[in-house]
Image (cartoon, rainbow over all chains, first blue to last red):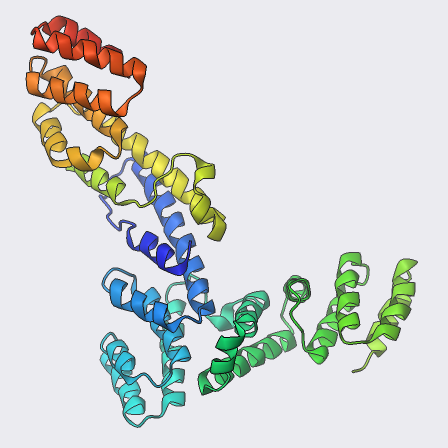
Length: 273
Length: 139
């Protein structure tokens, strides 16, 4: 199912609550809610990965009366990232906002200050999603792998898309923003090793190029916490190979092959770009 | 009316499949949503069926048949239950008996279809006792 079909599906879900005390009815509501939330999160992810601004605009036009506000804002937000100078769409979006946000955003749009306008849109989006904790969280609360997923969408768009997108400031801003978020998250002393591992392995297995410095930082942090994780070593070898660090790869392989994790760790800690 | 609200809710659900593995399209994007949808559909459907079975007001049943007959043709099992319950109260309603028999002939298999032909014959003959007995045999 594509984005349009999924939106059509979620728009059809009833929001009626007959307020019955019957347990069977309560169960039905629970399933309906689970169905809705799960669909919502998938749709939001697809919106974030969409490069089809015509489709996004069509969906906004057709469904804006029938979708939850958070999804509408998400649709506008993505559309505006892709077409950050479309003043007509800005004005339609502004009409949905409360007076304070309206004033700020209108001011930027009227002055053609689209970079700042986009930042305001981003804040509005975060505000709405923060107030719905059950829904997919805004970027600062998302896992590294989720952020990387969006970055990957930017990288894996068709060549034609990228050629057009790279020319837009929105693309560059978004790319830089996501990269920055990843760096900040990795540097966070409270990040779980599981999250680091998930990020490293999902990126490597997807064939996404991790920045060499970022990759090494993650590996050092992770292996110091879990120096005997064979599977993770496998991913790390792929990473070293990609960056043409074949000598390092071979040396490390010798240590890991004989389960000499002390020396493996010393070697990893001494690695420099 | 609770039963009507639930029927409306049920009719509004797009791409209804009662086989979990048939929620293919949704499963491709989102397995948990497909599972939750399946259980939501199942529970809602059986709840509606039970409410129909418990409904003792023939006017309500007739109203539901009239209002949702056409949309419920896509869900023959629901409309069949509505008719059966209604005819259990109105055992000499020739028009509804005939409509019911035609519905069964069109939408159901040969075995039920044969019984529906018999039912139609009994109704033509105004043999209400035999019609009521045959009605019970149509599942």
